[in-house]
Structure formats: structure tokens, C-alpha cells
Image: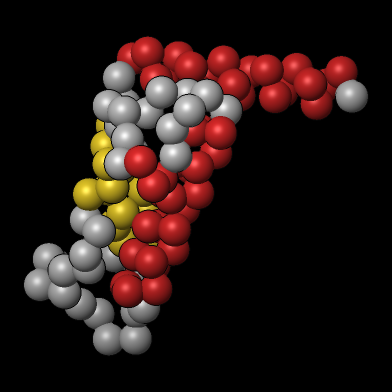
Length: 97
């Protein structure tokens, strides 16, 4: 299994870069970025716990112009298929329950 501590799930942009874009007064870019970084770590932990091999995964925490945190994922086709299977299985369990 893989988890966030083993380095298998590479999180790029782990440092907030204040010079990376245009700033709008009153928009909480740092809060959005932190939220995205935390969400990426949460996803890594969940996928690792489910047995998905995420060693080739790249995740970038960013913010939109309005300050909302976003996570950009780059996965191999095999990883995408494994995640799709998990989602389908979860949907099937919910329908059966």
C-alpha cells in the first residue's frame, strides 16, 4: 500500500509562491492553496488505503483567480482505471445498500 508519507504521491507546489500570479485585494489565495494541498494529501491517503498504486501520480495544489483551491492531477492510464473501478464499486455498494 502507498500513503502520503512514503513519497509515492508526489505533491508539486508544496511551497506557496506569492510571485506566481496577480493578486486581488481581499482574496484569500493562501487559504485556498492550503485547502487544495490538504485535499491532495487526503486523496493520497485514501487511494493508498484502497490499494491504488499512486507512485506515478503528480498532484499540484493551486488556486483559481477567486481564491478557490484546486488540485491538478496527472495520472497514468492504469491509475485512472483503478480509481474508476473504485468509484464504480462504491456506487454499486451504495445502490445495493
